[in-house]
Every structure is written in structure tokens, then in C-alpha cells.
Amino acid sequence: MPNPKSSSHIRFAAVGDIHVQKDSAGTLRSLFAQAADEADALLLCGDLTDYGTAEEARVLVEELGAIHIPIVAVLGNHDYESGTPEAVTGALMHAGVRVLDGSACEIEGVGIAGVKGFAGGFGRGSLGAWGEPAIKLFVQEALNEAMKLESALAKLRTRRRIALLHYAPIAGTVQGEPVEIFPFLGSSRLEEPLLRYPMDAVFHGHAHRGTLEARTINGVPVYNVAKPLLQRSRPGVPPFFLYELPREAAQEASASAPE
View (tube, helix red, strand yellow):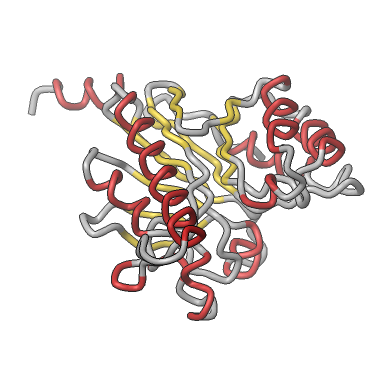
């Protein structure tokens, strides 16, 4: 039985790395229907397709077509594989999905800032912009994505705020992956904008064998919602992560109630 929608809280169902292929028709409709029954909005954290083709994007849109809750998405590295990420973005937007890329939106009073992100490593292991031009370009891409996230966060005017990424902004949620590939799973540069704005939660994917939850330096929860991780770490539970926040009206009513 679906959970009744709450008048006091808004629920988000978050999942990434669904990797839709051309023959995936019919394989995700049940998952999306379950998410729609449980949540008020669906958050998709990149790698929505396997090769980033228009054909895969059409299959994805068909799988999403049966649900009628708001959907917000960012792309992942797989969605760029064929060199036509605009085909994936265009198909999703035509179907009413809000695709964020350094931009923001609002769902029932909750602000959502989104960006793909990029790699480069964490903390003292972060790659520096020194040496060959190719290295500098690589680092600059991470800086560009961090600046896009900063710009998106600056647009938000809501009290409640969520960040939607594909790459990880902290090392904590990639723990469990081989240490050798940590630099390719995310970047601490993505954490820096998150420290400058009040945040409720951050969602990302990409690290299929990572850790479900960790926190930024200042204590904001970060959730790795890669579908393979959710399937492995929570057997028997539908592979999406359910997160809820108080609705603004309910929160204000509670704050003004006499003691």
C-alpha cells in the first residue's frame, strides 16, 4: 500500500546510476511507480543512460512516463559517453523532467541545486593544476563544476535546500571502492560550495560500491544513492532512498505555536 502524502513533510525518492539501455523497456516502471507511491518528488543522480544515446533516452522517458510526481535530474558521465548529452537532456525536458546543470528549482518549498560534478580526488589527494596542459584542463573542469554548483546554490531563496550531484563531494561516501580509483569518483572541490550555504542534504551516485551515508566537514548528510549500492546494502527494499523534510507551512506553524 502506498504511504499517504504527508501534510507536514515532503518526501523525496532519490536514486542514481540506473544505466538504462536500449533493451531496458519494462524493467524500471515498477521501481518508479513504487517511488511515486512513497514520495512527493523523484531525484535522479546521473548515469541515467548507459551510453548517452537518444535511443536510450527514449526508453528512459517511457519508463518514467507512468508516474505523475515532479522529477529533477542531473546527468552523469555515462550520459556523456556518445558525445550527445543534449539528446538525453532534451528527451527528459520534453517529458517534463527538470534537468539541472548549474541551475536550481523549487519543489514544494524545497530548493534544489544541481550539477554533474567531476573527478579530481579528495583532500590532500586532490590533483593540482600544475604541469602539462592536459592536467590543467582536467583540474579546470572540476573547478568549473564547483563554480556551477556555487552559482546554483546562490540562486536558492528557500529555507530548505538540497544539492543534487553525480560525482561525490566527499571521500566518506566512496569508502568501499578501491582506494586507487578514489580520484575518479569525485572531488573535494565540490564540497567547498556546500560549506558556504546552509544545506539540509546532498545526494550523489557514481560510486557503485561506496558507502550510503557520510557527512561534510560541517555535518551536512551526504547520501550515495547509486542503485547498485542501494540494492546491495538494503536487500529486499526498493532501490531508492527516501528522504523527508518538514514542509515550510508546517514548520512555521510549529514554531509559532504557544508552549
